[in-house]
Image (cartoon, rainbow over all chains, first blue to last red; front, side, top):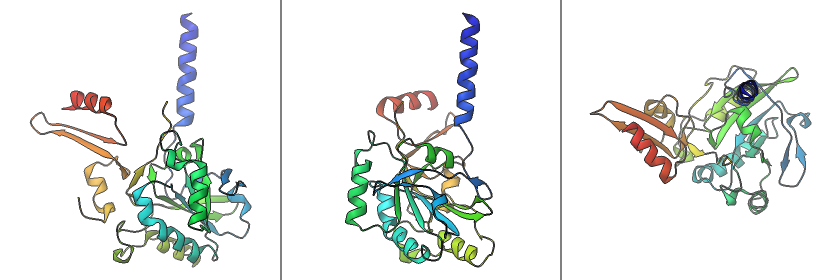
Length: 202
Length: 54
């Protein structure tokens, strides 16, 4: 009896250790994923043969900070999508905790705003956990290096959440522009303000 | 808290804070107690945290 309790405790510890991992930072190798987009298609980064990298942004329907950044996310895709760095937006919010972030609501929003970037549903929240995302919007700039995805930048889009015109540090755009020139990304990471991810209640 | 360049001060509130809001800083200067909690708290959790840290 005692032995079996001990064994299950050890098993639990192993399970916890495999789930918990360090949040991605610049220099790490990012994992690919396979998530449903708002058109019902399963999307992986490996499908983008022409991409040089990606602007992965943890995103959602309901967060006021996302709303402030929405046009900037649209603009990032418009500017860099055709240059090989498409925006890949991922909604990790649990629909029970935040009904406005359900798959159906994502579809409605993407349609009404005519999103040209991929908007994916991380229903299991595994991708957000793996990347170490904590809030929305939370950006990971990735570059293709050999067969791998290298994390180049983690954090905020720019340094003024309220007013795009007043921002004077454009972290994501600067990072991608440097990568397009084959140069080093100037800022490896920032702390991004945003709404806490609505994790599933256990 | 009106400085919109959040990256300048998020870490000063608490080095562990990733910038996710809501976030709560509990402090009691008389007892020299300080605790930072990132993320949501319901009323019960809030009471527990106040009792524990203040």
